[in-house]
Amino acid sequence: MTTVLECDLKHHSLQLLREYQQTGKARLRNQIVELNLGLVRKEAHYWVSQCKETYDDLLQVGSIGLINAIDKFEVSKGYAFSTFAMPYIRGEIQHYLRDKSSVLKMPRKWFALIQQSATIIKNFQAEYQRQPTETEIAQALDISLIEWQEIKMAYQNRQPVSLDCPVGSDEEANNLADLLPDKHYQSFQLTQEDRMRVQQSLVSLEQHTRQILEFVFLHDLTQKQVAERMDISVITVSRHVKKGLNVLKSMLVNNDA
Image (cartoon, one colour):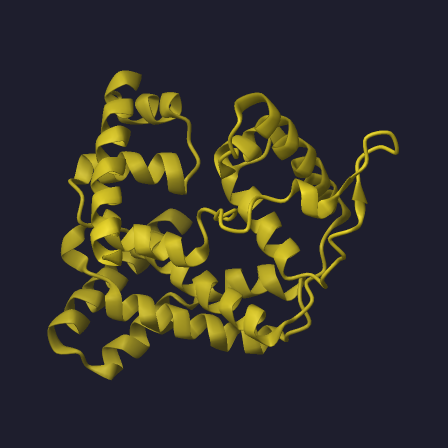
């Protein structure tokens, strides 16, 4: 029963989005906001336990992100609106929290993972002579890429700590500054702004390639899992990933030029 109701709501929402794109009527946009407000509530509930802002404030801010997503969404691209809208909602809330300089409450487990990541980065640099990617760090910590990004975001919004604080054992203690990536290196490779830019570029890709990239990078599935889900070979998935990344890289570079 719930599944049928959800399908009806998605279908109704899609109809309204199509009409709104054609007419631009504020009445239709307000209806779309009401139908999808659950996305904002979910995100607001997540962040309210980690900051000093009220739930109502976060709900209002997230609603702005939802409205932005409605205005930018293109029905013809075949993209799921909920998937498209979440980065806008989350990004609006995170920008608001950064601008307000709110101190996020960080779970002990997360702080332990941050400390563990410093050791992972140090060892990786020593072995491979390069900075590990965010995916490689997440795999070493045995957590998903999305969870690692959320941990880093929470850590970045904490009260500042001294870069001279020691990390590691007494015998091999290092200053935190020694273990951080070079300041010119983009340590948070997939910031919220990047996620939105990537998602906006994704809609321009061929549908099969776009779907594979979404599974791998947005839903954090392995290439083997994607192959099983889409009933294709892992090699085919790998080829589409390589092809899609090359196209995205070219598009993003051209946009920055």
